[in-house]
Image (cartoon, rainbow, N blue to C red; front, side):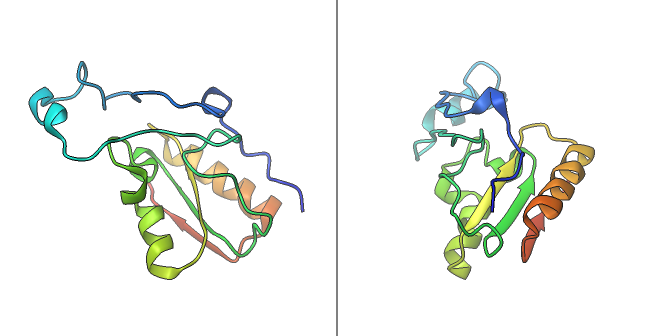
Length: 127
């Protein structure tokens, strides 16, 4: 099976310090931001998603699709809902998310994954 064409070129293999509003300059409460107790880092895979590299068995993974809440903006990666779902179920969860994603983008992305991968499980968090 080939990897689906879902790709976010701007984030490919990136490790940005901040994404959008999760920066001290743009957040609503800089004091809270500066005192947050856990480090937040962003690492994007070769497809441009905040996830590790995808497994070979894509059909048996749980595909998690959504916006910045799914991405976990301002949250340590292990505390995102796809990471929590993976921990609870013991299944590999693939995080396909985009900060500011519209429901139209989410629907197109889900349709592409369904067409190209035919996954057994998919969870969508609509905007």
